[in-house]
Image 1 (tube, rainbow, N blue to C red):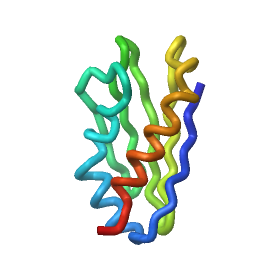
Image 2: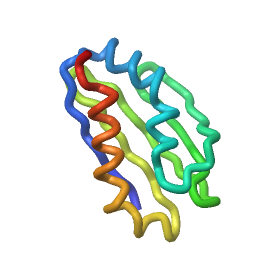
Image 3: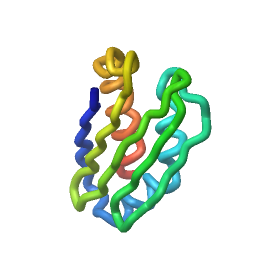
Image 4: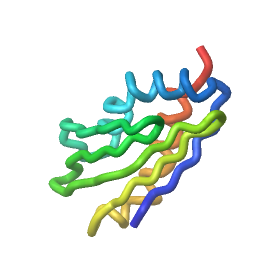
Length: 101
């Protein structure tokens, strides 16, 4: 079951990309049961990633746009039942990362 998020921001594409690039691994490690190792690959403003959560591979795609960041995370098997509980914390952590400082 996928989690789809849209996080609005006022940073512009370049600054939003920079902040995500520097803080993304920490954001993903906030997922309950995350086992630390995060694999990520940037292609322009599109980030493909994977992380081990509760012994299962979780993958996703994040896209940095001028005024929002979209994220889709695919939760396999039983992790799909946690989608509702993960959406809020991930949304909040993403907003904190993209808040103007």
